[in-house]
Length: 402
Image 1 (cartoon, rainbow, N blue to C red):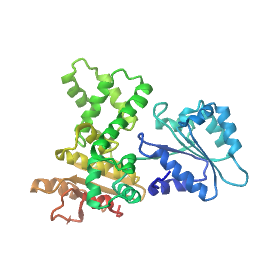
Image 2 (image 1 turned 120 degrees about the vertical axis):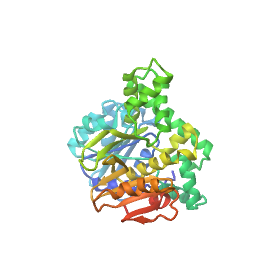
Image 3 (image 1 turned 30 degrees about the vertical axis):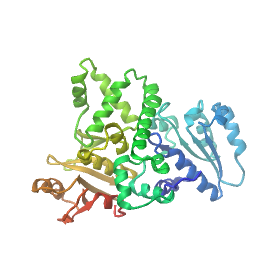
Image 4 (image 1 turned 45 degrees about the horizontal axis):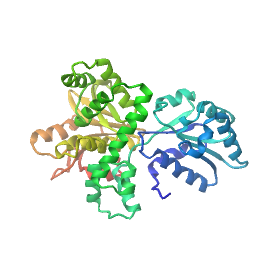
């Protein structure tokens, strides 16, 4: 099939091609894990590797759920004098799959790549099952630049501003951009993703008995993107409408939403003491389009939507992200990865001296030389201040400078 290659992820995986580490692709449902692995299979095959690719969701592969049959099938597909590659999509469909993988790792017979669903196991459990022989790659929905690539690839009108406005509204799930869904159909598709995670991942995995409570928590997060909050506050808000709700249930259900990757938790960081401030944690969604599908697009919610977009952009680029605190003043994002750190503030625009001081002034308090950005939807005349870069959201998302 005709798919767009997501080169950023391919380049992240390339250094580990041919090693004895099992490459695990993890992420929320329908973020593009299977397509990415198919892209990689084509690339490795073109480079001379012998690729055995198995999708366990295909009806014709149902017999391979037996571990002995799977192992026999794989070994039959291997060839001598070449690099053999094994790729298994939705590997949890194989009984005792970890024993099969461990056996193949022990014999050093192939280069292994897998994906799996949270309905049977959490991404954090792969390393446990395989005794530390894994390297995980977090896959996210499309960034803005990838949405531009999709529009170009599928021959659609490609005006950067028009694509950006669509991205603001519908988010970045690949299927929406592959098929060019309109806004209404995109929201229906995004709701279907939520339902699939709730019904196929969370409910069977954790034996959830109150899906309505699960959805109430998700709605609360969607309606409060980027607002500092706590699970206790969520519990108190829900208790106003549901006096009988148990605190333990709210805490457990919230944890399930995080583990299923519908919700992203960002911890706080003390920029002076270098400690973690869990009381300053903020919460976002795997994709801002999920928020709009649940609550409708609302210009009044743009500050939170902007933060969600920037967070996923940073995570997609390989940054580890926290919320900064310097003497009680907030820095929206502190982003670290090998080779560098950046600080980011997000705002609709500089509309007053108070807003200027909050956005530029908070960053000016940080006395180091790492790049600092104030990202604005409407930059106006503000471009820089004391070395702090003022930049529009669209230009920030397109930039190669960080």
